[in-house]
Image (cartoon, rainbow, N blue to C red; front, side, top):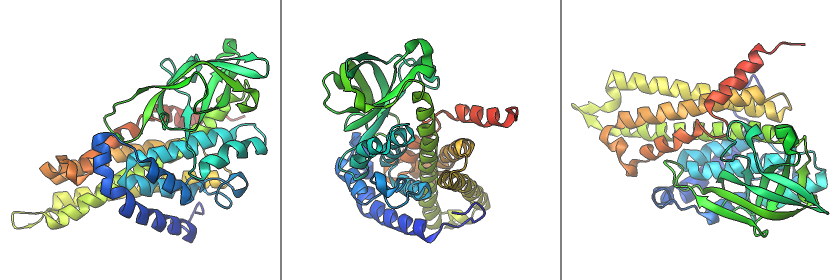
Length: 387
């Protein structure tokens, strides 16, 4: 999408239609049941990969689809999240955080393809290990360490809040190679499921995105070959930050999708529900409220598509990604809360979806950098002295 063109090109419209058909036929029928049971469908997730969705953001030479388009990927996350935000965040983490860690690392192209291609096909899954009990917004608090031992490294530490952690075949794990340097001594390894000492800990019981699988990952003397080190000491931190920039676009798309999904359900309800002898939408207060929400959603969409287009055009996208993440996820929380209110008692009932969407929306303001962190990123850039 050109920076001054406010309409999606044909390529993205085709992706949008394909994903919309998939969500209506495959995701929507079981979404309430998966939420209530906290169960994730690996079969449906793998099907998304085999449709080519995991490879949308990556070039063909790394196992992706064609030239790679982040805008196509953002549109896909948005459509998935309109129906199932749990599937949307699993998708985003695999592509933006695991894939972004590999793609943005200083590793050579052969290594990148080795760790990307199996995941982009849908045959294998990826996760991202950065957050720890002592390190959330402050990556300098990381305590996972990697010690050189011959041709291998020995990793010890614990990661928390790992989306896809319980079933991931590949995990990008950030660890200190030079602990005395703190964040500047950070590197990144690719760990494989089943490595001795690498295990899944507590699986989280969450308020929202209940079907998404989120867990601790525990490393106890895990021996990792040196060839799995994709970012050496000093390059791990910038690799993680670049991955998070892409991840913020993914979460922005998730937030926008949640907002749109709730809005569409509410709009249809207001057209058929009658009170005082007329449909609810003919109440001017309700109609005006919906007009405001519709406008808010469109404003958020423009920021998301701009950030995606900036990334595709190789322009700086750190600040655009933060703006999109902050606005789209605040929009998700506001729109879903208002939709529950507009639908009244029905909105509070699980069968109508919007209460789930409100629960799902909350976490989007927190992960991939809280919205307070996004304000820090935006304001720091705004007031930085230009050289």
